[in-house]
Image (cartoon, rainbow, N blue to C red; front, side):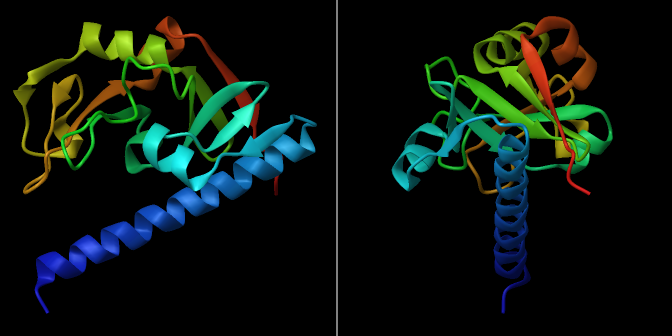
Length: 168
């Protein structure tokens, strides 16, 4: 079997497992905290990056990434097909909830989009995701565009709130 194909399958499996874990934890935390949240439909998830509705607003939950452990946030500007990624200037989702293990950081997406456009030079492309702090990164044989900002930039600039992880 082609190693590249295997790594792609492995990456998808790992990504789906992270998403599944983070959305389950998120839903449990909302329940524990008496926060009404409703799971979005599969179509809403696929087309609009919406995992949940909470208080009439949409939320996209992001699993914990290696960049999170380093105090950074990886941002998808374009998806693997070259279409608009989850960080965009359209209405939905209103909030992005990044999982950091001890908490979920909810960031108002329009503020994050504006911060990204202000701080990042997306034309300055780098060869790896680890090097894409304030720069653009496109994975080999993909049409995506990713960048990264520091968590502190988000906390200083964007409307945000925390949901503490009380699950042991």
